[in-house]
Length: 218
Picture 1 (cartoon, rainbow, N blue to C red):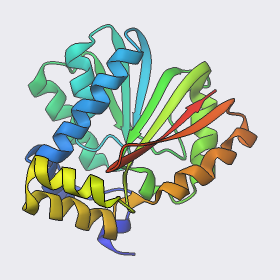
Picture 2: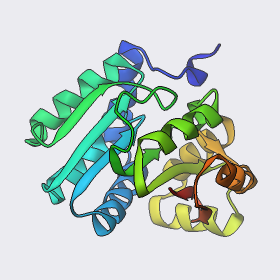
Picture 3: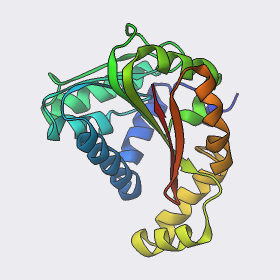
Picture 4: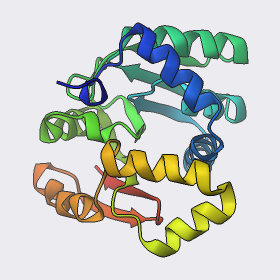
């Protein structure tokens, strides 16, 4: 199994990944956009971030919405340590709880969350159906889950906009990763609309050109 396909990034790799993300304007802008959408949707209650990595999304949310109770999990203990450090430095460690856990085994009780999110970790899920069953289990009735990924089959118009906004070099790096590692095709998310059979009342796909999201309602 290659480094880029493992579910949990080990210690040295976690530090490298965290530094890359911290210095990437494209990824940072994407994370901030997700955080803004979460805050607009849920101003109080409990949310979960699956595959949190360095914890930047829940930290951004906590900075703007201190009334939210935020939990976050990652299958890499090194990432959990980094996320906790980042939260302390941001002054939000009392508002965000980071702990070890995976999408396939969420370490929380049934009906715990108003909203569950995951950014750029779906491609690591070895058994997606088991993960979705766990999401369904831990969502409150009427709760939602949003799964975000970089789109592998990025349309040309979206590529041109990315190059215009961020330049050729950064755009090339993101699109290269999209082709080779951290993304799924649009049709893959559309095929997951069958998740309604698991117990979700509504499943939709949202296409934003570079990114796609799967939206599920319990």
